[in-house]
Amino acid sequence: MRAKMDWRLRSIVVGLIVSVTGCSTTVSIKGEFAPRVLAGENIRHIAIFDFSGPDGAVTVKELESLLIEARSRDIPYFKIMDHSVMKNLTGRYSRNANSLDSTNKISSIGRTLGVEGVLLGEVTQSGVHKVKEKKEVNYCSSRNDKGKCTRWSYKTIYCDIRTATFTVIPKLIDVEKSRIVYSKSYSGNSTASSCDYNEINYSDNGLVAIARKNALQDIRLDMAPYHKNMDVIIKSDDDTLSDVLQEKFKGAVEFAEANRMDRACNIWRGMYYGLIPTGNYNLLYNLGVCEEFEGSIACAQALYRRADNLLVEPDEDINEGLRRTRLMLEQQRVINLSEKQSSDYASLMEMECPAH
Image (cartoon, rainbow, N blue to C red):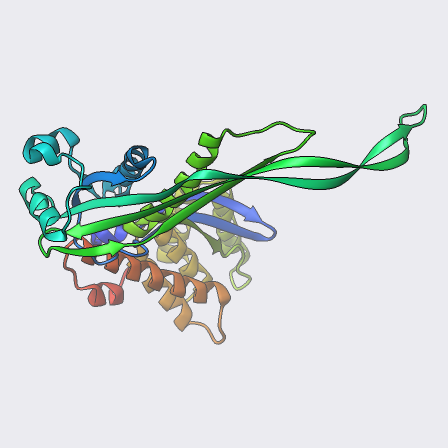
């Protein structure tokens, strides 16, 4: 029977889709990565105060929505304090931190609220800069009876170039330690142009909204775990097998190409247990891909290592599998540290893991 895996390791990746590129069958796997900046910080329950500056209110609303949606292993990463509860507890301060002139005072309010951190900030720029630009363009000034251009001419046109810039400086305060643990300036830009021959596609407010979204998305990636798709190659052939086993192996590949990794993995596992010796590196590698697809990163790494030990020369796919699983285990270790979870990851990473 398969050893029971730690749920924290099983949920780091989720198999998505399978595609065929050239001669390679590729599984798309969604990996979970630690926050780019706040990795290791133990602040999950936060209160968000108003941001000062232009468009501060809408900035808070949109950033709060992004942080509420942030998830790790399908569990909300942050607990955001409700605004009405904040108002009842803090009275006149409510969410407005503009009048609070010290980190100690803000921390005191945070302790009253019962949160671990207070997020506040300042929007330093939110607007559109406009310039006119002159361009020389060529155009067809004469055509024959068949509509073919017989003469090209040049003319001058004038374009309105509009560039929206949004800059915000968020600040996260650890209320227990009364110190700023995170403060950084973020900027987003968006540009649109309209010339004599076309119309304006975005309003000024629309351009600012795009610039703001770009900046806030960077904050989101720095503060909470995020997901990214990774393409993982499946071994599609093995000429060391007999004709019968080769047919089974390729049949599993066909299931994978049809987005049926469940059937593909069942076939490969059946071959592993009953049909061929365990010393087949292509089969062990594909079983490692199955474990990654199902979220068992430690098991995947163990299978890649077993496949690697059978090689007499390096294999690019196996090398990449080892590199990728080391990365994902390290990412999960960092996320778990920031979630105040303890685990002996050294032993988990070295664990022996059967194919199923």
